[in-house]
Length: 430
Image 1 (cartoon, rainbow, N blue to C red):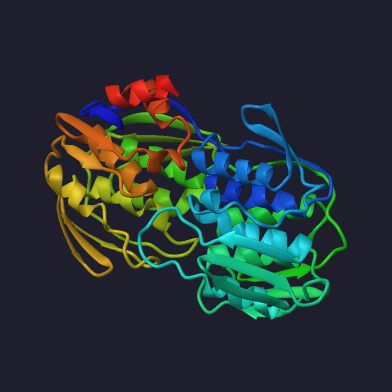
Image 2 (cartoon, rainbow, N blue to C red):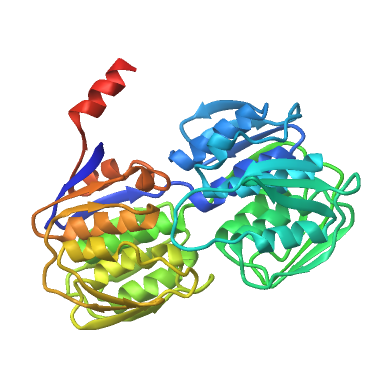
C-alpha cells in the first residue's frame, strides 16, 4: 500500500507553481473528439484522471502524441468507434463528457456510468434531459449510457436546467456545438472551467456566447478545425496550497493563478487570519496571527466552491471559537469527519451542517483518504498537526493533484511517499 507520511508542525515557505485545471482538462480533452484535425492542448496537469481520458481517446482510435510534459497533440479525425471501454469509464467521473462529445460528432455514444469520488448521489437526469431535448434517444441499460441521435444531426433547442449543474452544462455545450440550429442553456452553471471549455471550442471554430453567465447561447456549426489552446490554472489546487499556508503558518508565493477565480476562497481565508496579496498572476499568502473562527457555505460559482470545503474545514479545526460549515451543493461530503476526529478534531455533523469547535492542536494519526478533496484536507491537517500522520488510499489524491508531495517538500514540509515492501516487490516482479 502506498502512503503519505507527514511529520507535522512545520511552517511552509517558498514558491509553488499551480498546474492546469483538472476540472477544465477533463472536459476539454473529450472535446477534442469534436475536432476534425489536430488540436494541441497545453498546460495539461499530470494527474491520473487526465491519463485515463487520454487512454480512452486512444482506445477509441485517436492519435495522441506527447509534445512535452504538459502538452499533447490529439487527432480524432479517424475515430469510428463510439463505445468507450467500461473498465476505463468506470474509474472516472468525467467520463460522461464523452457522451456529449461522441453524440455531437458521430450521433451515437455508449459510455459506462461514471465512477470517481463518492460523496452522495450524482444523478445524470439533467444531462439526459438536455440531450433528449436536442433529439437524442438516451437510455441507461446495464450500467451503460446509450445515446443515439434520432435524426442525422442533433437539433438545437432551449434547455432550462432544473438545478445548476456544472457537468450537465458542459455536456450540453459539447453536444450542441455541431447541432443544427441554435441551443440556449438557461440557468447554466458559471464556473471558470465552463468558460475555459467554451473558449477552447470557440478557438476551434464553435460559436458560443454567454459562458460565465446563467444563459449560454450556442449556434451550431458544420465542423470544428484544429488549433492550439492552453488550459487555465487550477483554482482548487491554488486554493488548497493557500489553505495549507493558512493552517500551518508561514509565507508562500502561489504562481500561475488567476486571482479573480480565487476571490471566493481568498475572502474566507482572510476572515480566518491569513493575509493575501495579489501580484498579477501570483498571490502571496502568509499567516502569522492565530486562526479565527468563521462561517462558510458552499455554493455554485461565484460562491465558495464545494471542492474547497474539506480543506477549509481542516483550517477551522484549529481556529479559535466555533465555526459553522454548510454544504450547499452535495448531500454527503462529510465522510472525512471521522478521520479528522482521529486527529483530535471536534466536529459534529447534522445533515449538511458541520459545527467545528476549534482545538489548540491536532495530533498525528493513521487516516484514510476517502475522496480527492478529503485527501488534500488530511494532508493539510497532517502538516499542521503535532506528530506523525500516515495517509492511505492516496490514489484519490493523485486523481487531481500533480506532484503534491514534491511541491510541499519544496515548501519545507516533512512529507514523503512510503510503499510497503509487498507492493514494491510486486511492482518489480511486474
